[in-house]
Image (cartoon, rainbow, N blue to C red):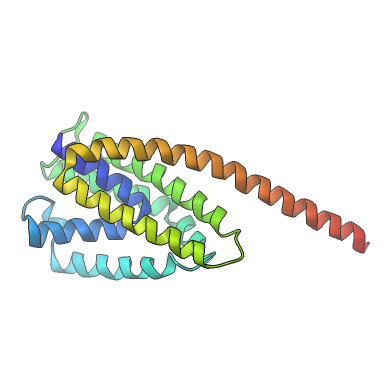
Length: 201
């Protein structure tokens, strides 16, 4: 169960920030609990690369509209990265799940896609607001979730399984609701543009 908690927690967190998740796991495995994560994440080069990418994402994620473009690019990057992380965890013998590496990678990738979907749709909705502060608040909240979830996954993996299950259900609901909201908002904007065009002509 401990390995499953690590797998699920890191998978969901990767959907919010793949680089921060990898960095936090690597730092934990190198300085706090050697052997708790694959050595691939604890190397000096890996930590520096992850730190640089996490720093870029930390800044970009706070800028309205640019954050949405970043999320669009990472619609593929985050789930694939999470799946690879899952494979590495299974390969290192830290996780025992059905179907081995395929099962571990699939579970982590699927959870990352779920959390990424909630993140991307939330940002799309928040970016409709004219003021820039709400975007930063939401981004900081997501950063907090990543840090808390990774910590939970390595320290209390059994609890992480329960938390991830709740978060996953919530993420699906949020994604569906916000997708409807964004579609309706776009339709209203289109209707307004058409109305203005008719008035001009």
